[in-house]
Image (cartoon, rainbow, N blue to C red; front, side, top):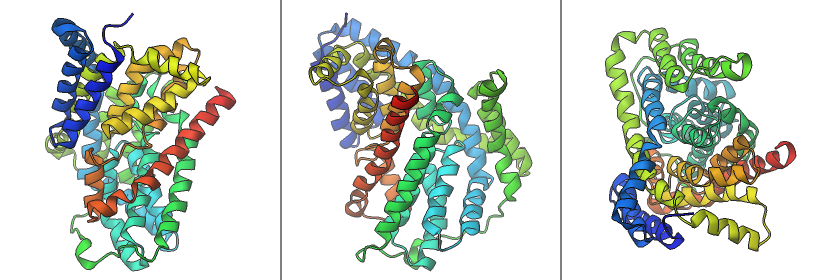
Length: 419
């Protein structure tokens, strides 16, 4: 029934986490954790390596789509489209609704295909300038950006969404649409919590040295949004008109349209290379993730977890959000967490009668609860975007978890109500 013991899978994952914390590259950490976990789990060297290779191979379709998505991400960043979209939203909503504007801007940028950490880094200079003028603390500004990013991430064509849709064999667009309501609730909670945080007297104020200026000419708003709109339209053709356009085509097509509309099409090679540099890290991470996901999937872990749920008389669908939460927390990564949880528990959840689309949505939402722990890069990248110390950055984790937990709870409620 299985090739490895639960103990081996857990020990392998624990080894990977320890190595990541000790600053070993996450991909190598996961590969080594998978190897040791398989051997400890009683699989033998040949079985372990074959399972690792098989697990990595299962990631290839996701990796290919993610690599091509770099063209869109690179275009949005290098043409200034992402910054223009953010500035326009903040300007239109005004200083009084500054935190709501910052959260919404980050949500939209992430939702159209920019990675969540890059979305935060893109909006950060605008947020800091607004924050200094409106006298908002850096903690409240960062929470608004992170919460907005989390809301946008579960409705985006980003690596985590692609990985979950691949594992459950569901349409990417349908999975993005499935979590729209949870994303709206997450955005609302983000605005509420960041507003409350801004009223704390011990918040760190924005200083002049925190603010960066740019002399780059930004495109017009219409030119900036056409590329992302093309992606949305192409991906929406399947549920609307039955015409299937794979993300492999839709994402780079949107990037090329973005370059053309902003007058940067002649720089397609440079922008594409920049975009590739932004996705190569997560692509390599996914290959490493695939190795340990293969070991976990071939272990007794899923059967033991199901037995534990039954012992506590908990329904099978609880496994979906729980798996997303635990795996993302273990890897400190939405992408790795959603991938491992989906790869491991998709067959179990489907056989238990949970619809594939709902299960994928719940896992995906769950993967945003504790994905920003200190042993992951997101924690440090976002803290650095507003110059927060590690101590001050850690103080935001409970607030971020509340945002992710909100979208998870709403996703579960929607499953219970409509399946």
